[in-house]
Amino acid sequence: MTRAARVTCFAGGLAFLLLAGLSLLWSFSSMSLAFTTCSEEHSLFADLARCRQPHIALLVVVFAATGAGIAFYLCFSASSRSEGSSQGRPR
Image (tube, rainbow, N blue to C red; front, side, top):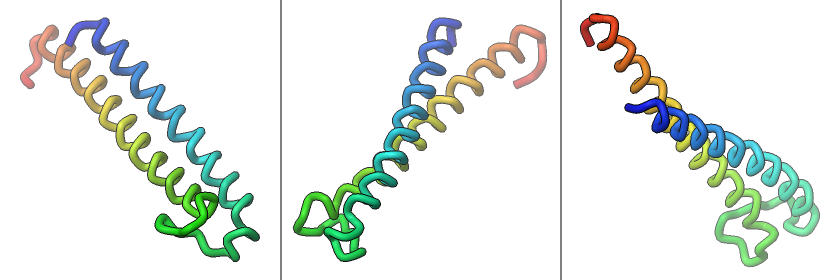
């Protein structure tokens, strides 16, 4: 993997990590706002949109954190493979 591709992959991982953090804050905020409106019941299939928001935000956290993990794995595994091959180490 070229250096530009690794930098792009790393930047994508950071963007996914930022999205996961902001979505986590969104889930905390929406849980707090929906606490009394939803009678302490949050559900992904609730009638009120406010009662669905905490679960939607948590799903975004999971998918964004997974995307960040995959991006960082691809970035760092590709860099270690290219360093290993340039130094004569077996893969």
